[in-house]
Image (cartoon, rainbow, N blue to C red; front, side, top):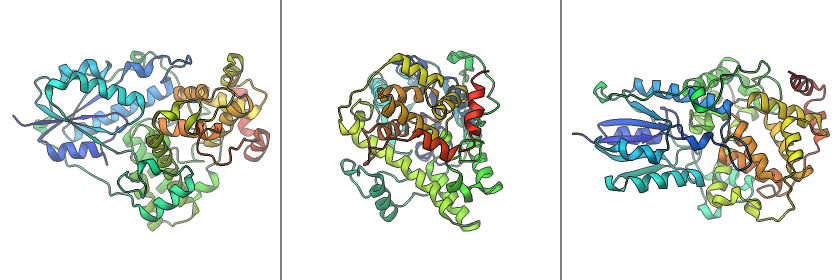
Length: 433
């Protein structure tokens, strides 16, 4: 009986340019996949927020549905469970001739804890665990820094990587034999199974997209090739209204529906065929920012979750529940903050400009414990990514990578980016309904 490779999908929910899948297919005659809707991801955290709210839950369901379908085209079966991985894996591996488990390398505390649990309960199988860094633009082996020497300042990191590192080529795989398909009694859960009621997408949302690898590729096709919006990205990226002021690719990047390498190579193709300018470069610039926060997390580990951040600074932080609730509900003294918070609450989305302002207001004006704000973002945001979320909150709160420790002037920001108050009026009115 031939060996079977098991691919444990986590935040790499794609078929194209997936290193773990590529390795599994290259090294095994038979390959199957597994995915867990881990109940811990839908429980309430220490601050009273669900770790995953309905918006990202629905996006995740869409994503796993497309992953399952795309794997089936390659004759690979995806098993789906709503139990703890450590409760399922021992029985699942039994009798399947699995010697190797392939998975994306993660390093933050929760993911490491879960993997350690699974390894501990499957020791009798003597499994080979193949973990691959697969969420970076620049692979850790290719950057000109050792992990402990990652620069504190983004500009140095970016310039050195642009000068000395290159982006790896994309990987692909051929379909396996149809004989690889095995019986699969598991099913994708419904939203109600995850503890949520069905909901309608808000009419005013700037993010009306569904999850999944095919949807990510369709977004690139639309934003790059159909509308040529990529050529204007730098001019419009601080927008607040509509789906096309930015690429919106962050949500698919966050759960690995698409790789940053794929986006990079598509930008390079666009530059060759349509034209290169500041805007095409700026999308790559943003991908490098995303990498930077991942490397900061890799370097500083659990310090990114601590109140003193990576700088170990001791500020006086408050946890005034009344102020927190006013911020969440859009009832602060700043209409621009309120509009952004209402948008988040009703859609699971907020612009980059909005995020910077509401986070700065939370930490620098209200002087509230920034980790509470970060946890609320984790709960609500469709495009939540642990490294970018906590990296940005550290940055604006003065305990991270901002060498200038800035505080946003909310009124000036509102005047600059919403001078006619269209965004504020839209969402302040929406609060009433």
